Image (cartoon, rainbow, N blue to C red; front, side, top):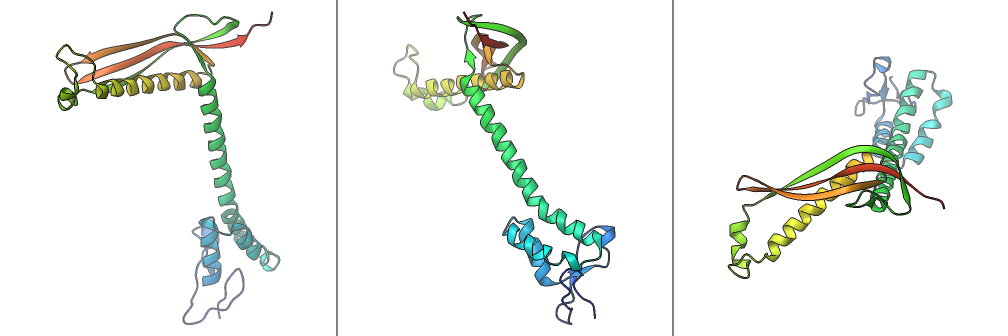
Amino acid sequence: MKECCICGKKFGMMSPGVALGPYASLDGLLICADCQSKLQEIRHNRDVEGNAAYFHGFFPAIQNEAIKTYITKVISAPSEANAAKQQRQTEADERRECLKNMLTTSGFNYEGWRITEYLGFISSEVAVGMGFFKAIAASFSDVFGIESEALGDKLLNSKQAAFDRLLGQAYDKGANAIIGIDLDYTMFGDTLVGVIASGTAVKIEKQSF
């Protein structure tokens, strides 16, 4: 009678067993429903420690090294995924902190700081759809073109988006500051307004006197 290649449980007519894994080295190896369920729980990051202890308890009796290797790989996958996720979160937090502390100016120097490296010209663009003009025409306060609140908010948000992208480009270049920042608006036909932010990415360091 066939049995589970992990725990040794005998298979019956109602529980014939399932294939252990997709690799050629595991061809013909079957596991019981309990072992299959525990492997699935590990794959879904549920009770990894408890299920790992369950499988490790059978390792001394398992002679086939391919089985041990496969189970070890399944057990380690959630830990590796969690580590990768944590690494991504750490990198995102570091990026966010650097962007928050990045110095910016429309001038070309910082008092008390020294530029140590010029990393190149950078620019970012954000396009604003103008189809909403008709919809908000009634919100203009008079015929002399006083800015509507809706239009002002949309342009302000676009300006901030362009600026944020500029900061991101500077960070990607290894900069900790941007000099010569310029913000411009340009029309693309009758339907789009482009918000363009530009500057020079630099590295700076505090001067000691």
